[in-house]
Length: 235
Length: 311
Image 1: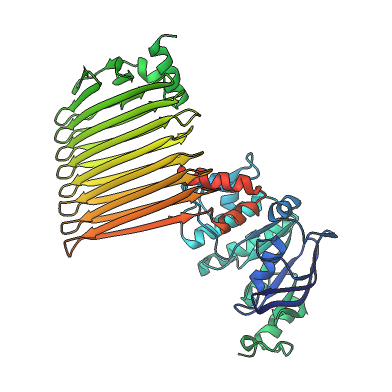
Image 2 (image 1 turned 90 degrees about the horizontal axis):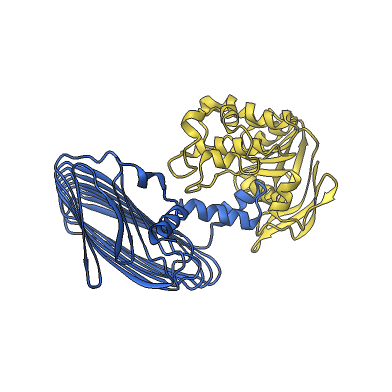
């Protein structure tokens, strides 16, 4: 579905990705683990094609096609989407309009219910500062679900979500897969990574471990990574 | 076409509801140039007009404890390519009255038109006035609009004004609103303008919170493209205990447009508080990327963000 081949990326003088390779197969949830600041979100931005996140070397393939030169919109129209660690606010854009951005005929209420929000309260509200981070996160997930993507990068979908709603978020992540999407699940929480079908750990700009979620979370928690020389990893 | 029909047609184009003009329960006043073409009053509302050599004088008075059931609809305009419209309006809302004014200002074919509005508004104790003004200026940019309002709010008085100029070219807009708010009074001034071509927008809005616990909000949203320019001055003074004010200005610029925001906040009482925020710049990159990740093109994303800001 999505394959990263030997991706290099640096921000200024700092190397972020240093020959990173990763494969996410069709209809799987692949968890990407790593400590804060290791480059997990950067990898998501590179897949999505965000401005300023063009790899200096390496290939990004989507369904066998090299998509390095495609912009965000083109990638989205091919079926790639992303939800952000910190969803932005939009003044004057209603929740209803936000969910139905590319699909005006969709049933916005049903998508809100899927993420545990009451449509009667939320549909007419604006995606602005009146919503909490957790509420915007859920709305972001609802809008991504409504796109029926083939590949979704979910960047820390549980951040800002209260602990009592953890199971709701797990349910939503699985819905992406059940609706036919592959998911790259970016997280640093092992308990969330365990819902995936496969997992990898990013460290020192490379994937240092790939396997079952249990194997990778054990590796992550035991700080077994000896590949990288980053201070953060040694900590 | 008779002038009244032409004005109504322009009013409709500007989003006005023609049906309300035929409704006997709904007050209205329509003026083209310096001619009042149609007027209807209702019980408790006194509307008088008089013509001078160079304009129209309008007096609106709402009786004590009267709440208008239906909004007062105003439509002002110059329908010809050239002309001048000078309106002096005096509004008085007596104690504990309430009214909603909906004004449409239409200049559909203006190439050299001047519209000058000078309003004095007195809102007495416990009274409330809501004033929404929507402009339609046509495509030529040949309009000079100079609205000025001086508002005095009595104790617990409330004044909510919303000015929007989103359709057609702005031309030149020089808006000057000033409000003095008494004890526990509330004033909210909102303005939304979309400038194109070489439009020039100058807004000056001021709220003086004179009374204890008075509240004020100045909210401005401007979008500019082409060679348009805008200068927005939002002034709030907190002069009494418990006074709270906020100035909030967002301006989005594209192309060669130039935006400037000048928030002026001052407090002369230790228990007053006034805050401000201003954001000027191009469309937010992360907002763009979020919408593009949903499949919108960059142009569609910008359009949606701008429409949202001006909503």
